Image (cartoon, rainbow, N blue to C red; front, side, top):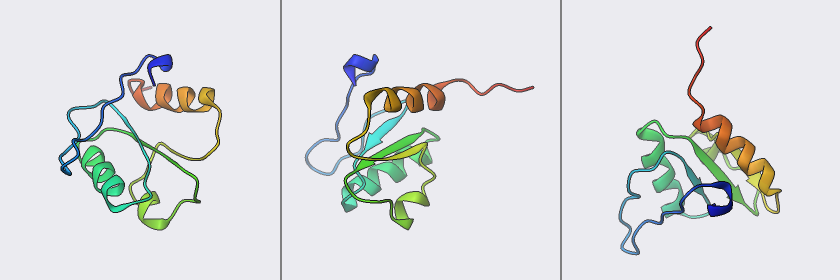
Length: 91
C-alpha cells in the first residue's frame, strides 16, 4: 500500500473497528473481514476485496469497488483505488 501512496491500517486484535479510512482493501474470507467491510461501507467508503477464492454473494452484496482473485497485478489495485477515491464528477 505504501508503494501506492497509501497508509495501511489494521483493526486492533480484539475485534475492534477500523479507524477512519478513505478506502479499505480487505480479505473477505472470514467473519471479521466481512464485518469490517460492512462498517467501512456504512461510512460511505469504498471497499476492495482480495482473496484466493471466488466472490461469494455476501461479499458482492456490499458492492465492492473491485474483487480481486490473487494473484493480481499491483497496477490493477492502484487503478481501482484511484478511481474509487476520485471525487465524483457531475456533468
